[in-house]
Length: 220
View (cartoon, rainbow, N blue to C red):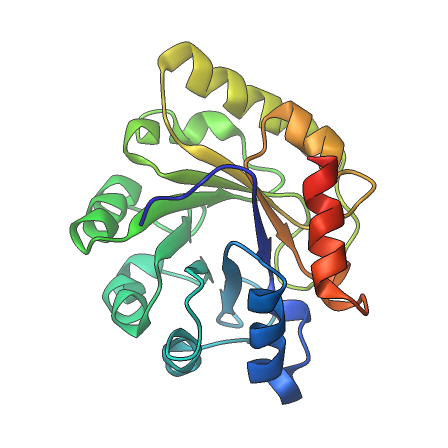
């Protein structure tokens, strides 16, 4: 999978779970670029969400790429499972994986895009020696676990750091931001170097997903 810049990735963590198929169809019709799926295990974060069976079902009903974010302990043990379920991009947390280089290589060997995620308090220099192999770096702009949180402004410095890192060292990873993204900050984030915007409640709590996504694009 080749990730593209200036993409909108609605997070189904904020969707109506009772009508999930309808919600996915609606964001596809609204011209979203990716579906962001937060997998939580109740250990790495204090919440439980989607497992591989749900992802397999989603994969069978949409043409949109699945951006699967593993907020779980020992994510390297689950790479094969989620790849088989239909993940197109697999994101693992550096805080949860002891052998991050090995895990990234395994994801790529399976033909998937390989990404890492950084919690708000994690310094971005921890990914410098694997950055050349990454397709994307996901910057958490809220503490992971629940949707609808307020954007943490200090994360802006981390985005700048990553953007400078890739420019100075000729790395090709994209920068993705997840948490508190909305129409009030998306222009600033785009100017800082963000390429992929995860939006949960900012999309799913509106009445017209297409209009919302079009407005986001106009502000990038």
